[in-house]
Image (cartoon, rainbow, N blue to C red; front, top):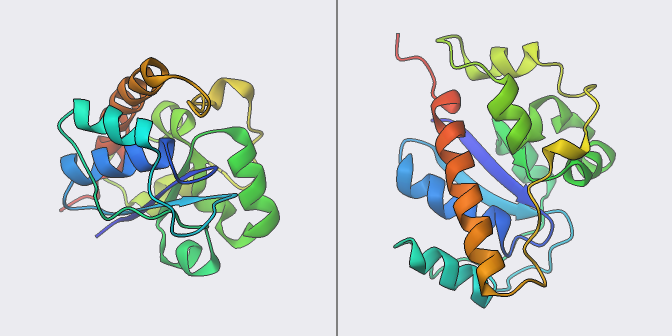
Length: 171
């Protein structure tokens, strides 16, 4: 089973949306969410909950979680939402920098061939690649409910594009 962490800032909106969507669409993956500056054990934001409910999704058990070494050791891939998340990871968890990239970069660069995921990630040289502004999925925090609905729609499309790339070969 492939272990995936979705990483955002507070683990209250973007990573929650992606985690709930991916769990619903890819039950063969093991998926967690975490934050870079998270206050542990808080529920998701109300606007996140409403945006997910509008898509027929929910996670009543969610509590925010700060990324820790146990997570980085568990993960096969860490999917971030902005360049600052990658910079945080490189500073605080350099051992995981080779398996971490932004969601847009993984969609653009990770091929969906039959080779093992760890080999495909290694080939990207993620620990040294420069992260750029185009890689950010804008944080809806501070926005009204329409901003959260738009963010959920964007993340939904991105998750759909990512999931086939995370599949391991069954050969």
